Image 1 (spheres, one colour):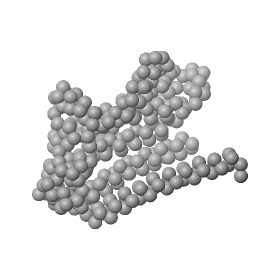
Image 2: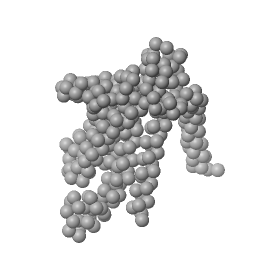
Image 3: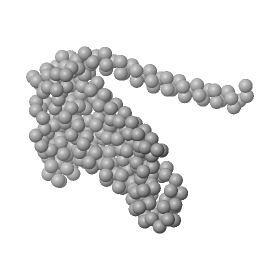
Image 4: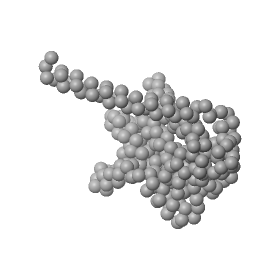
Length: 284
């Protein structure tokens, strides 16, 4: 066995060991959450209002609030993010300004979520006078998701061969006709996948909604977009660290964590299924 084969063997062994360690940690975490929280989950737990300071009852307001704020996030982030990506990749010239814009977008992807929360307080709650509401939280999460959406969408557009564009332009198609007929059909699966994964991340964030509209205990559903709301991640944070009877509500906290994991997993799975379906339709 020569030196190259030994190096290759060691490299693949380290990769397999890393995968096994990550998988083992994931299994341990999931086992702990499922074993402690599955027994608490029931139809009543998912469809009823909280009672007695959330020591009894269900988490319906938190589920509904998480769903609504995620929809608001998608309404802001998806069309604006995809539009920005299309402009940067298809229309903007490759110069110093666009390179600075791209670098700024990538840097914004790494900004801690709590910074977006403070920015949301200043912009939406105070300057735009939206108050601490579900709308302020959704718009804040939308801003946080924008860099992810733009980056993922632009990378998907870059993966479309230039020959597709050149062929359409050679036949006399306009720039937008070329993009809409020869570029987007091949880029949309990747664009949607990255966008949905960004939304799944936003659905599990606590810091941005902590300052802009989330409340711990509201035994009713949001009446309007200007109302405060309950959300699964913030609810889990309070139940795990700030509740006056932590030991008593710990099973509820584990059950809430399990519901949130299932929600995020469902969103991620839908991204994979949607991408597969769009690719299969394109090949047909």
